[in-house]
Image 1 (cartoon, rainbow, N blue to C red):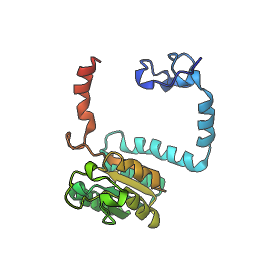
Image 2: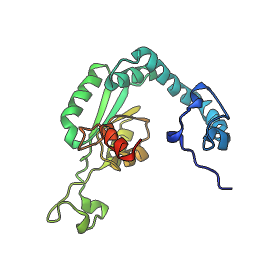
Image 3: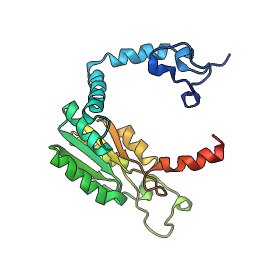
Image 4: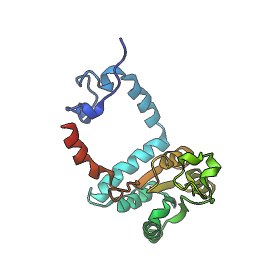
Length: 208
């Protein structure tokens, strides 16, 4: 019989919040593939990984669950003992990036900030066919998340903060960053960078 894939999004009980359980729905990964969590516990036993987990828990406590995300990033970075933060941002959010960078510096961090257009790439550099271009008659600028990540790697950032990178560019940045990453905001051109604003519409359409 083919093994069922995990479907946590469809689970109504969420028994996992109470601890290990074999009483979840038939698609529950704690029932179908419990050995995954033996592997997870082995990874969590690594002192560096444990430190990151503890940093999260201390941030919950220190923020009293009442701080905005920028404030929580500052608290988490302090709890982790980080001194140098990376800020990878979209050109369209340059004004916001300036404010965030200033806030991080005011909080005592060194900041390496990288705009998505760093390196001056164009779509020709990635072999984009003319028919796939928005600007078919001239140079089409190309975001360079790999360059952003290499910049952060070169200058030794300890935590990278992503601000508004496009879908796919964010994946490339995550793939090439050596430092751990947290996300301040994601790109959503329709909903003021709040993609969850679309959920009520889809919920109604799906009859959920």
